[in-house]
Length: 382
Picture 1 (tube, rainbow, N blue to C red):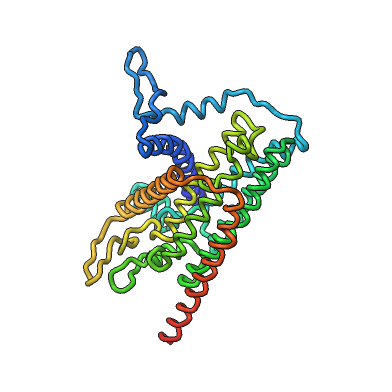
Picture 2 (tube, rainbow, N blue to C red):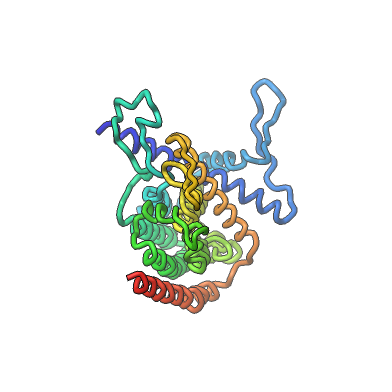
């Protein structure tokens, strides 16, 4: 139906606009937050001049991201004599596109009732309701891993096709590192799947609206604090960010698997990294921080312990849920940048040893303890 197409077109536009905005803003946040942490001024040169005036809008260097994007678009696109021209051309898109697709299964709000939200369109929409999620799939969490694993192929294609030893070495590092930490990500989330009994991300968020011990929100980070820590560390390694940036390692490999890329092709690799920061933050928010809901919040308002309730209009609930989701995502993005400017780079052997000899046993131990605890609780309640 045309109504469904309109709603999902709005969802897709919101998702693309949000991710692109986060990718742009985070380039500025990284510079400014790093400057604050190291007692520097940071980006403050790019500006926009108001027409016919001498007034320059600097806005704390916020225009540096726009200047970088414009530079990438107009730079000359140098191409090496590659082993495989097609693989060289398609690699940036294979690394960039799956990052966007992951957001399709992440819920950014509860239930949307267009006829109630926009009364003049009530007759046209009727009683239709929509989950605020582009693709509501029962296997949502599995889709995340399926799309997330595709980015490994893009990195490998870029390094292999560039006809450059540094690029090939970076691609080999990227492949082994990303595959190793992908396993850690899966093991840490199995505990949540055992607890919530589903891989549907929207269902997981709704189950986090409850409470445990009568007063604590049933967020994933409360039920699985150890898994949350492992997940964040493995996700940063999966995104190849400092202290796990060995596939790029400027001081060793120039720029790693995208050394031979220039102009907007290199921009796609870099932009994908910043968008993936937002995707990791959105996943962490969805799985461990209650998603789009505040504690005790539901689609009709708030239900506090003791029977006290606060009713809210549908429009107020929708706006609150979207704003809460974006605020949590931004905070987790800032945390990842905080880690990036706080820790030194590991050696490559240390990166893999950290995955297989430290995080892997801990993830298995966490899964074992969780499985035993869930089984024991079910036996008690049976």
